[in-house]
Image (cartoon, rainbow over all chains, first blue to last red; front, side):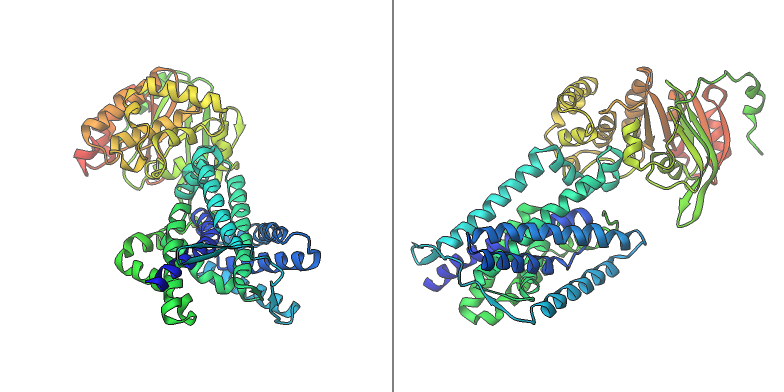
Length: 297
Length: 259
């Protein structure tokens, strides 16, 4: 019982990191319909550059988190605005677009590995802060801050989507892009905002993930994309609220499996949850993945 | 047997006012294959122009070419004196072309109020509220639906929301693509003879695509008959007879729905 409660405590911390990534992925996938596997390397870039700024400047480690977000935005804009439209305009199909993003992500990942010689780096300089005890659950100050950041980002995004005209237009365009255009909603601006938001979230998720695991290398983001993807798909595309709930499920499953079965299985656990849900409610999830073929870029 | 009832009348046709919309020699289609060829349609201020034709005649294709959902292969679309045929759909909408598609006519996961707000996306915040109030006055049925998600509405309610959404920015021209498709005869009748006739009566220009000829003909001032992608007749509505049109162009096929 003790182990279980402890695992749930870790699960909530993991979930908050997954949620940051999953919200960005789901927003972007919901709007553009591109199952964008370069999201993983964008997280890597956020993590790497965040680490770099921190290790060089050594001022305030939290500047690295901001750097991660900015790097994520820049990388996503290059990929989303520079590369994808080029292919989409040529009438690329659903499967080809996944292959394109997979290929791109490998190219970027190995480029990073070539530059840093495949090293991995310790983030030992990052303060863990004081330790808090909630019954059997032990949480560090840094972890609490990340839970807070995830909650703040979720509330900001939910507020944006439901209270502002821009956010409502983003939701409108996710479900009916053609109708949104005939309402005079400026497609391009909404797409840009979505790329920026999802890039920022990817970057922050990347640096947050490596701060939590204490090491960063050229694979970091692609390791982390597994649970992020699982949570985004589980929570239904385009729904940040769904992504948060799904992240909690995936995060807790990961940590419980890790506590009882060994950490080697923890990544598998996220996909296990996804598989179980696909089996139980296939229509709900699969229709989301297969029905849309129009890409919005 | 060809329908030639319009031929004699055409000499006494009233001169039409300078058109608000003039689509000329429009050719458009999918994957490089034209569905409509060299079709022309005009809508003058205050006119309700009815485009009818059997299934597959290209009515929706014509509409999509006018709204910008589909690129023109050739031809021109002049709206308020400007060529808009190469402009993107959102710009044409901003110029004053309102559009209610046949399918996908509302944002299903948004509430009715949010749907209306999206219709008025280009308006100022204050103007949005004022327009929503005006439309709720014009269509009191909307009032109890305001907080409902659009996907939970009945077919008739949904169509009303779609029309109100398109009316938010007070478009100069409203294009309705088969607004009564899949509605019960009673609801279809209410949408056509109350809502659409009301818009026409208040001076709005309407381009109405319909299959239900008998229902739509009384509210139309001008009729354009489209068959197999080509315009077969273009004449004032009072010169045409619904039963003859149906007999001639719809081959009594699916008569219940058509007439």
